[in-house]
Image 1: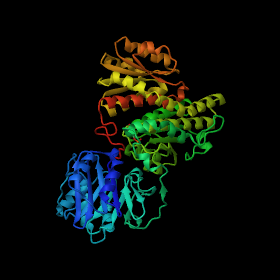
Image 2: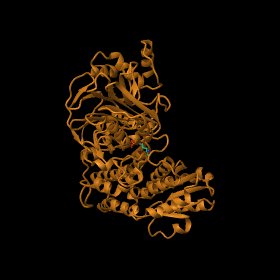
Image 3: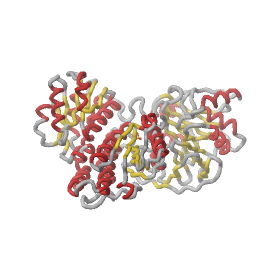
Image 4: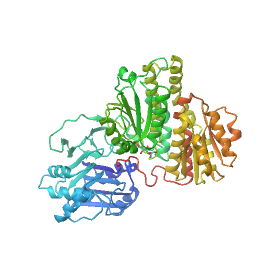
Length: 609
Ligand code: M6R
């Protein structure tokens, strides 16, 4: 969850670290810190709160040096405070460590180290690492880091500096992401590629139980036993400014606007003509495997889970394979039964979500074939899967997931259509209509963005409410769940997403003039039922925003406000319906003055269970 950046070269390390951390602040923003090696030894600055506070401190108390490590924190062990923020320092003050992950045996290690005379200054698990490196250091820093790592249980991506080795920066990893950026006369470590893309497009993606020893002129890669390893260079495919706001006030807004282009990219080379078969590079399933499928289990967290629910509907309804979707955090608890010929589809933007990774391992161990739908290339989930279909959304920085969701939906639509095609379970006409509908999504998304002003007007009418209900049915139940999640996470308005069919079984008790309902009532098989729900809410004086298909002349007479979407086949609609709901949540949060890209208590990537 935390972000780490390290630099060694001829530039000023604090400047690079702060710049890099700005691109990682989505990983956590409880506190931040930097350490550099100077001619006088280690120098450290740490603050509570966002990176802006660290920048302010660096103005008052400047820090300079050609090698440094920086950190932005999302607290796990120990509350946000200067003592608990990283970098953590050894007793002698010459070793500095930044860490992302959780050291599960830290309490045990801490008591052992204390018994040996090490003095701790924080409540964190990370500080044990600085003391362990100190304990094992005998002149060889890389060897000391390796020995320290051998004692650690849990997950880590580390950056380590030593005052006596101003020409070395060390990065190491187990279960938490780490890349090494390769520059000219300079090298970097970072939690993700976005943090170094400004300076280089060439990275080594570090694997579990591997480390890198960086100098100004090169990088030595080895495993945690010290055995050298070979790794090919990964060239980052997106431009340096992809992780910038590009004129938008917030990353979330920029990412909402990137959807049409990203959707075209996602379809490219896979589906271009409704009369030709879909080709899914990376799926890695034979036609025989697809025909023999007995069950599909989808699993994910948060927004990705909502995309998984759309996938479940499509795979069962259109590809005619029994399908279920599970919250990743719940999957292992019920010890799932995995039948022969079961496919597990894990959905994740980051590819690093701990619960999703645990679910993957559980399903794999039980014999399921694993395919993942991922954005971040070469991420942990991608690497542990038998097949990966990348959504190709480019970097998503806003904590609230937007473009990743619609692209996950689009990708799952292609997977379902491909399965249906191979299994021969749909008529050529039904297949053609579905594929034509999918192909229209990017243009419809662009059309929906052109209606932003109308969405903001609706947001004006509701931004002061405290409670909201989002209702949907069938394939658009996930649209309601996702709409509610988006609103609550960035505007802090209490929002419940519910099946409209469940309304009379409880939630209707909440309906009154101070609670507004968003009802997803686009044309399709559940339209009439949704109209019934809207009428029931209006009869109880609840304000209603209807999400309706262009040309619908009934809903404007029933609902107080309407968010319009262009007509499309029902199975395709979740990819477009979400866009006005994203814009609505964005404008409500903006009107309420909320920190849209960094909602309180949240982090973009949840790498702890
Ligand atoms: O990186 P992942 O897609 O695995 O992340 C899953 C959730 O943590 C994520 O979707 C979260 O719910 C977002 N904040 C939603 O906007």
